[in-house]
Structures are given as structure tokens and as C-alpha cells.
Length: 230
Image 1: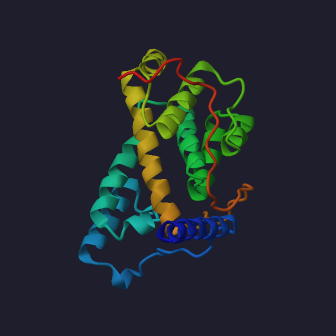
Image 2: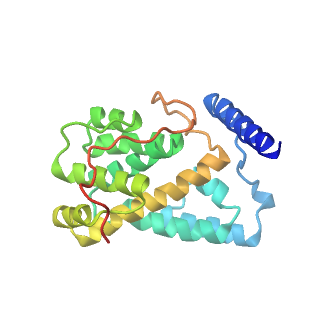
Image 3: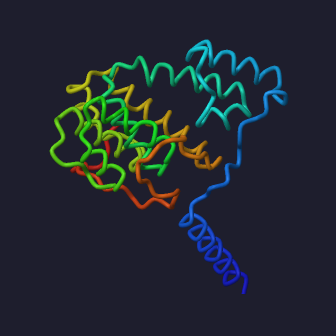
């Protein structure tokens, strides 16, 4: 019958997706565009990138596929300029939030770039390892703990319960709390782009990471006692 065929098709698609994910995706679907093939709009976007990030900055990672939509690339880069380099959060906290997001999206390039930065900024190796394993890190200080709880709530519950938002604002401040939300959204965007493009990890990186896979639900150390508030 029709419903049996539909059920079979859905099941087959899931099996094929899982099989492909378990073996990783080595082929870059959106490789760099040759310079002589760039449109005028793409050339302007590259020039803006180098002006903002430095003349020696390379268009790499998520910006390679994003260049196919140069307006999106330039606007995403501008948001990244603030969230990565000038947000209200110190690097230890902002990099930690980036790693929670990278782990949630199983984004190896994002992880490979930011895990060493987080470690250098003061996040412990054990906390970093726990994030990638989707295990709540132990013995976090109050600021890292609230960053973790906010990021997990955003990624899993798609909102912040009022009590958690208030706790974050007390510990971090209102601007920094909004910046955490911005980091989660921005790096989720980059992760989605790179997961679609199958962006390869940076050359020379040696952290032992699994290939792209279907991500299980992330564990969390914090759950609201009541339904989420406004």
C-alpha cells in the first residue's frame, strides 16, 4: 500500500544517510573558486575580507562556500569580526561557547580552529574533551557553567528559561548574555554551511576528531524546574 511504500522510502533514506555519515565526507562540495572565475561582487567581498582581517588573511573555512553568496559572506564576516574579536566576553568564555556550538553541530573545522585557542585562553583540556564527547564538563567555574547552560538550552530547547537568562545576566551582564546568544547563532550558521560543503579540516591540525556524523542529543547539567518563561 501507499503508506508502506512511504515508510520503506523514509527508512531507506535514513539508512543511507547514517551509512554515509558514519564514513565521513571527504569530498569538498564547495571548493575554492579560481580567482579568474570570481565575479566582481565576489572580488569586492574578498577585498573587504582582507581589509577587515588583514592583507595576508586567507579566505578559508566557512568563507570559501559563503563566497558563492558574496553579500552573505560580507555580512557574516562583519558579525564574526565583533563576536570573535570584540565581544563583551573575554576569550576564555567566548571560545568556550564556540566549542559548545561546534560540538553540537559536529563541526570538525570549527573545532580544530577553536579548541587550541580555548586551551590557550584558559579552558582546561578535560573540559574541552568533555564537550566533544557531549558530556557535561565537571568542576566548571560559575561563568563557564552558565555559558555552558545557556548554550545547551539554546541548542536543545531553542530558548532560555527566564531563570537561566536572569542568572546569566547577573554573572555576565546583559550585553555579554546577548553576545553568547549571538555566538551560538553565528557559529551554528558557519557550522551548517561547512557541514553542507563538507569543508575539510585545516592543514596541519592533529587533534583526534571523528568524521562528520549524525549527532546524538547533547547531555546537559541544567534543566528548568518549570516550563520555559518568556
